[in-house]
Length: 314
Length: 314
Image (cartoon, rainbow over all chains, first blue to last red; front, top):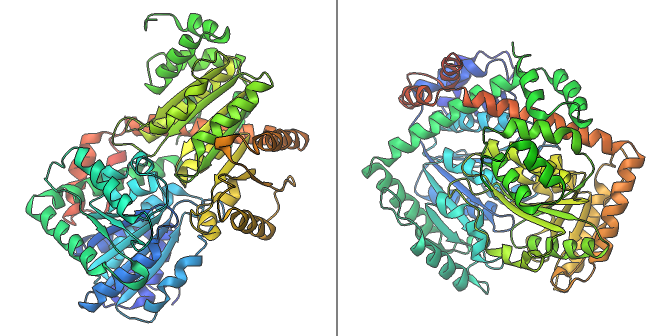
């Protein structure tokens, strides 16, 4: 499939479930291609159906294994599933190292599953803008659930939370104490907690610590108390309960008007990210190098330099 | 000390080592106070002496304990030391949870050590802009070394790397395999690797895996091969070797002209961050809410919405 296929054709093919059209569209948004705006315009009226689930946690908790087990469970009940594995943390290499993607191989030949990795390619702003568009493409392709898996602790999770209807935070025994988890701002974004590798020592303690923290935390305005579940994703144990919790949260959101609020907040964040990315492209990169030299020597302070830089905006 | 103390006086006091003046100045930059530009202008000509060391790693590797041990070692040879513990990962709570700050208490009464935690207070852009200013304040206060410790894996480390002359990446046995570490983009930013808790099972394997990865990685343009060291920070074991590696890297940077290059890149990133933060303040927040509703219903795509938003720039 060439780059010359017109966007309306691509979107039409993607809507009929053609995986190559889906892949091509995601590549175009990831590459910030000239067709991006046309794609966004074509997608707008045909999306908004999919449930978006964010899945995040520190390295080593078993995110990919858990994602794979969730995909299997959702497929079992006949859902079409999209998976976006977003790696915002490797801006220098120009590509995610997908060593653990092999865990997703079991779904690679299933026509009801789309799997795609996205990395920042040196442009975090670009990734922030492209990911919601990729979600829309999977939505348009008829996915009932889109799982967005993110590597990392910190800003990445916050980005996932702003993208998802429901955010699942995964943890595992032996990854540092509960205070460390709270430090990462996790309590605020988690709708469902899952302790993976629950057959290992320390799983009880991890679950207990999380419950203790949650008991102290402020109640959500829409009165949802994040459950703390346990699973052994590698053996599929406890996964049905996780799916059930995701369903429950989604129903609760809809009942309390929170789904609409979250989606509006998500759209607002998306619009702002696009606007800021567009502004930053308008800042002359050469100007900032010249100014940087003057800041290094102490001849200019960075705020005065920023003022000069903004005068290069065209 | 009141907010009415004139900035030149505050900077003068900070330069003479008054810890209250240092604290007050950092608060002002953290709060994005009206005096911020005046402070930046006063600092520009009197800074650029301190060595800036970034220290980062996943939750649970022992960052605070290691920072504390490094402070002790640097103090032993008579350096003045500044510590900035930056927490970019908790944008919702409005304050870092500083449970592990207690590990730094041993230095709290040492007049040769400044310790300060900085959190994002809901404004990541603000933190990105304030942290380099806080480094400058500690530099002006006569710190020979400023240690910038960051929580988190991912963008936070990248931010540290762009701020530091030398970036130390800390790991520990049992925190997931080496591929996970690489996924987090760590290979690209680390100048020195340290396996902490090296008395535990798996320390050999962790060090070996890192060395294997490094052997495969591209060589740095300035021919530095990041060493992989081991320590038990809680007992101070191996810390002298870590300090030695930091010194060596710094000398190597200077020899190869890389220090100047890094500092220029750092200044350029800082200028751009300030410019973007200033632009984002000029985007009307109300406008993006109205536009978001139209994006949710599919009436407008987010790129078209961003165009409309940018028309509100004044």
